[in-house]
Length: 531
Image 1 (tube, rainbow, N blue to C red):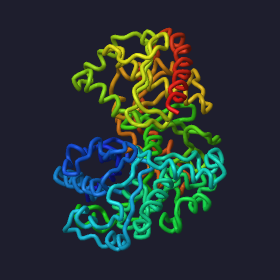
Image 2 (cartoon, helix red, strand yellow; image 1 turned 30 degrees about the vertical axis):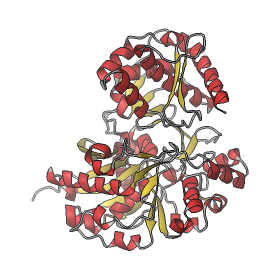
Image 3 (cartoon, one colour; image 1 turned 90 degrees about the vertical axis):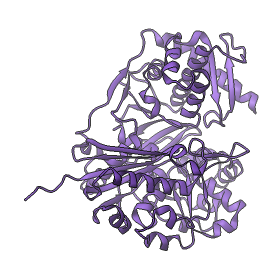
Image 4 (cartoon, rainbow, N blue to C red; image 1 turned 45 degrees about the vertical axis):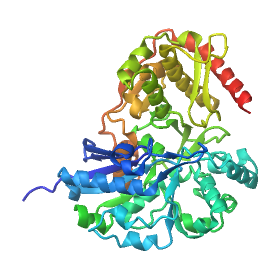
């Protein structure tokens, strides 16, 4: 009698520009990866970078059906390649944080009765009361943010309750804007999901609850009590708690996969769906972050995060519930102008070639001879500034930089900002500090060398840049064992360790110490001019 086939675990990532999936086995080996690029593979939606930037440059949305159709496409690709879905024991996933999906009255019934003869996007095309979802790049809710902070007793009070002061992209404020501007749309909405819980709902065939970790990026969840704040809910929209459902632990098993996937793709009916979470929390799991480490995700947005036990919420940055340890938290700094900004400068100055970009970067001196630049195509989160700002060695404004100087100013400036704002939150760069890099730019050795130099710490990467996918697959395994108090560290001990890719150049600390101070002063100068 043949031995039973070894089980598989799926990790999904509904990110800004792509839908990605990773498949791992019991030994945590990656056995399959696939992706759908929204702009390239679904051109009918007309997105750029996976989003629509509206005329005011403040509102940024994505079409919900594009995400649904992407799932159709990737599953069909896997099926055509001969992937054996029946071996999948459990799946989990991640979604770009803060984005929201609005299910129309009656959508629950449609979800529960999907026809296996139709692709998902055809069955669900009339299920959303808002066709274009506000996403994390949106900064159009300043009025709602002010109102929420006032209702709670100020920005610091809101941070103490929810882990963050009010931010334009946070879901509570996005909901408040929709309720304020389109009350009839809000009234027609049966359920409001995060992108993560929306994605889980597709697999579950029912409305999936929001998990604690992603839920703490909404300005609505009390991060210590892990329950909705009634004051925050009431400040955003009436009857909101019912539309959100009850939040759940990030490791919770939500149920078995929808019969739709069993009949259409051959999934095992016993395949478990674990709670989905945000892409940053999933990356924390994927990178197996340890206390004292810093993780930097170099993706569409750049994020810096680490594992903490004692949260100290402030007006800058965010505190989220940990996705893998109910007693821990993760601190997070997020920057909108990440890979899209790097790609624009690459296209303009290096003919779209990363190789040419990297050569130019490596050809310039550490510290860029004192030339400093700030590059914000869209309104940045930290600092709240927009535009391109260049400064010469003597702090004079420069209209342009030579090609090589521009490229180094961009990369050095992005990493100096991360170090400065991390240290403002109390982070200390210690001799034992490791930087764990992930995301698309983590493949670029020249960029990682600058990262190592600016932070005066060694940089490591893991075998896949898709850490949110990998973390989701790890979490699928961990969730099945969480009730026995097994830690994620125990679950992933077979996984390959991080790989050292860059160490600080000798003498860089002496170069960056004064330059970091200058950068901080110039940032304040930019902010005072923009006010």
